[in-house]
Amino acid sequence: GQQVMQIPQYQHVQEGEDFTTYCNSSTTLSNIQWYKQRPGGHPVFLIQLVKSGEVKKQKRLTFQFGEAKKNSSLHITATQTTDVGTYFCAVDSNYQLIWGAGTKLIIKP
Amino acid sequence: DAGVIQSPRHEVTEMGQEVTLRCKPISGHNSLFWYRQTMMRGLELLIYFNNNVPIDDSGMPEDRFSAKMPNASFSTLKIQPSEPRDSAVYFCASSYRREITNEQFFGPGTRLTVL
Image 1: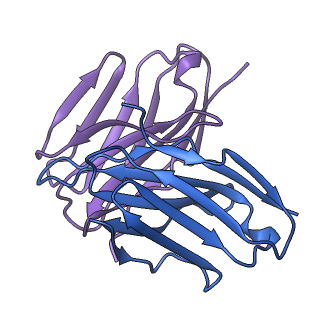
Image 2: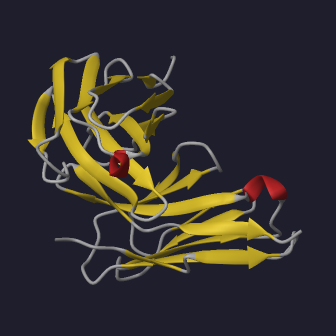
């Protein structure tokens, strides 16, 4: 079945530093979604990418979909404490989502 | 809109007892998903329904787990008998299946502890 690999598992950053998480697939994706889960919370939809090479921005968050539609990234510029949580990518497959393992963003004290 | 509603929010039970988790999806959504999340295994899809019909239950771990969706506004996930390894956060999510966009909306989850 379809799988999506997400790396890294964790990323520790100082507040103000940048953060990036990557998702990769061996097959071409129809689209990819990104979700954020705050500690103790539930996953919340952030965005969906559909087009090859698509780049979308939400304030300090930049989402990219690869030209071959096999990879995607989420980049956060100048992290803040409100960014803490786990970021998941998810791909559409037969009416369900196949989820990446998530990348946990941890702000160093 | 109230969003996806789950009950109870917390459940503590003893091994061997029956547990029933409840979910009310967002009105108008035609797909419903049950997930389980643990530190060890991450987010796992257990079962999903489309138009109240179970489509894929391959993620249901054992016969002890069962799920129903008697109508478009209600679903249950039952564990009988429960075991300590079932301890996890169980999420219900709903979506409206469209050609391009089908983002899922999650409920707050039920934190289950089986002693």
